[in-house]
Amino acid sequence: MTKYVSDAVELLQRLIATPSVSRDEKAAADIMEEALRGYGFEAHRVGNNVWAFSHNFDENHPTILLNAHIDTVKPVASWTREPFSPTIENGRLYGLGSNDCGGGLVSLLQAFRQLKSEKYNLIYLASCEEEVSGANGIVKALPLLPKIDVAIVGEPTGMQPAIAEKGLMVLDITARGKSGHAARNEGINAIYEMLDDLNWLRSYKFPKVSPLLGPTLMQVTQINAGTQHNVVPDECKIVVDVRTNEYYKNEFVCAFIQKHLKSEVKARSFRLHSSSISESHPLIQKCVATGKTPFGSPTLSDQALMPFPSVKLGPGESSRSHSADEYIEISEIEDAIQFYLDLLG
Image 1 (cartoon, helix red, strand yellow):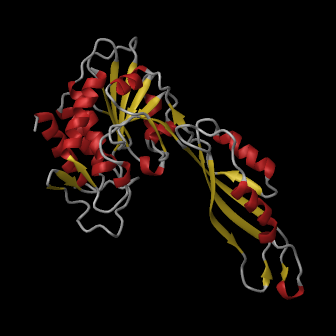
Image 2: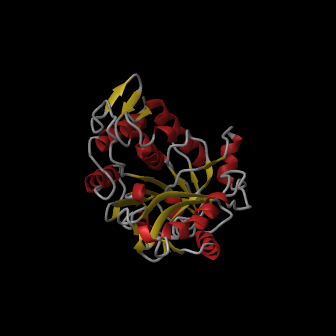
Image 3: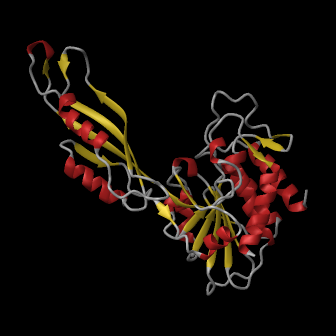
C-alpha cells in the first residue's frame, strides 16, 4: 500500500469514527480542515464546507473542481456492525459513509495532493448537507469560488463516468371541495375532485425520453384527506415526486402540470435540475479512451446545484449507499487515486 493510499484509508477511518449526519458535520469538517493544512494547503471554510486551491493558482487558466461530501444519512436499523466503528476485513473498510461518499472524498484529496499543472487550476471542496440538499451545503461555498469550468464529483459510480443525472422536484397538490354530512350526501367530496388529476398523473408520459436517463417520471407518493368517517372531506392533498431528465426544466414541468390539473399545484423548489455533460468533453473522451463507459445516473447529488459541466466519477458502488454494513474496498480507493492522476495528469 502506497503512502497516499495509506493516508486515504487512515483519514477515512477517522471520518467514519466521527458521526457526521447531515446538518451535524462540524467535527468532520474540522478533520478535513486539519488534513488540508497538514498537507500544506491553506484551508478555506464557510460553515462546514472546506476547500483549498492548488498551488500557483492562476485565474487565467481553466479551473477544475474536485468535490465530494462529508455528510451521511442516519444508519438504518439493520446494521449488524457498529456503523461508527471503522473495521477492515479482507480488504474491505466497513463503516457509515465509507462508500457514500468517503471513498471519493479521500481519493480525490490524495490525487489533489499530487497533481501539478501549468495548464489548469484545481480546487478541492469537501462539502456538507449533500444528503438533504441543504441550504448550508455546497450552495454556500460555490459563490465564494472563482469561475469553475468543469467538476468531478466523487460519488460512488464504480469509477464509470456518470455524464447525466436526473433532477428532482417535489409538488404539493391540493383539491378543494365543500364539507357536508356523509349520510345526507351533502357537500363536494375533495377526494373525488382529485380523482381525475390522479389519473392524469398516473397516465401522462412526457414525450422526450433521454437515451441516458430515460423518461421524466411523476410518482404520487403521499395522500391525505378527511377528518372523520361521517364528514365529506373539503380538502385532499397529495405529494408528487418528479424526476426530470435533461430535456425538461423543473419550471416548465411544473407549469405544464398546473395547466392540466384542476387542483392547486405548488412546487417546493425548482433548484434541483437535471445535470449533464457532453460526451465530447475532453474529460469524458479521455475516460472513454481508457475503456470507461458513460452512463446516466438515477440518483441525485450536488451536481444538481452546479451551474457548470460536471461528471460523477468515484470509487464504490451506488447500490451500497444508504444500506446496512456499508463498505468500500481498499483496492477501489487505490484504483481511484491512480485513475484521477491519469485522467488529470
